[in-house]
Length: 90
Image (cartoon, rainbow, N blue to C red):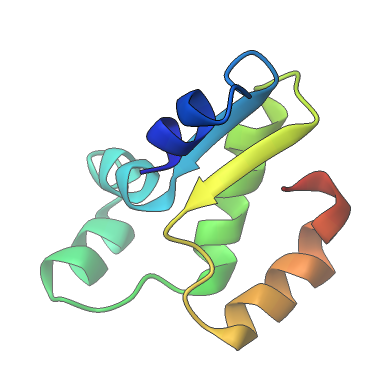
């Protein structure tokens, strides 16, 4: 969905999209804690997801990033804002 929005609105050369679910699934290949949480149907704690998102964000030299699938709850949004600052993400 994020990729389609970026392309549809012409932001594709200025904006990067990150899918939180894909990021977590990829990380679960080498991180047994995340794999266990995902395989048991539990939600990965916001702190872990934010840490992974921050690493991914820092890889890209762009001012606008669209995140798909995060935050899913207000407490995650608040924690994300506290840890990274909402001015880093669109």
